[in-house]
Image (tube, rainbow, N blue to C red; front, side, top):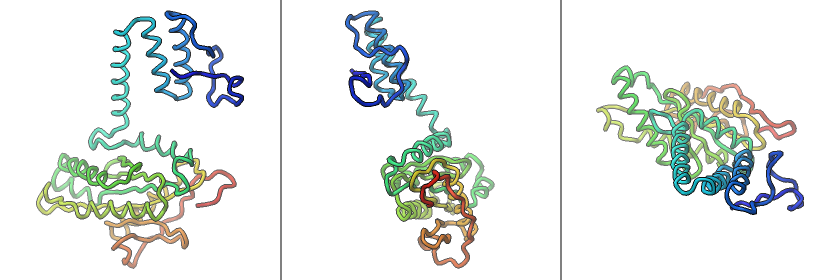
Length: 286
């Protein structure tokens, strides 16, 4: 059981806000008084976002008041809540993460530099090339199957800690925490190559699917996601305008847009405008 301490007992400031009437000592008697203490402790911990510890206190409170049968019911409700929460994060078609989860995770990652380390974070936006033609030629149900297979191909090679999310329509995002610029480009190029080499003809004879990708990178105390995602979006369209089936990124030294892998030999590479991330005042520019 978690022991809750006041600032006076620890000698340091309490890291989490405390409710005005929060008890600071454990219950001296079982039953209703003990349940009340555990309930208050659960409220305090939940308010600080410490859900697992809050649940343990709430579980103890229920046991003291109503016995084991109520605890079993609480466990069932907890499992159902966890399942519903996970489903709310998933795209209903592809089962990958959805836009809501993507936005939440980016805010959390970019708001906590320690979570991405000194390497920073890569964000790649990718779009299926000529996907409208797939829908027009084979029908929308078949197009749905292509997107489902695409997610499986993308997920198969992602490094630990990275994730894929559906950004909208046939557009997806790869989020790469703890990866420097070169690593983010390498992972994105590997994803493009996996898609290009996948045996899509298993779904329909003669079918070929490719993707275009734009890779943005951020490091330092970033406080917003608009600049990072906006940069990736501009680079995505640079990859498309350069002939598709390519990964576009901005060179850290020259600031020019480059294409990764075999596409790097193409002569014409559009140079989209730079979209500056939202940096904390005084922080170094990317």
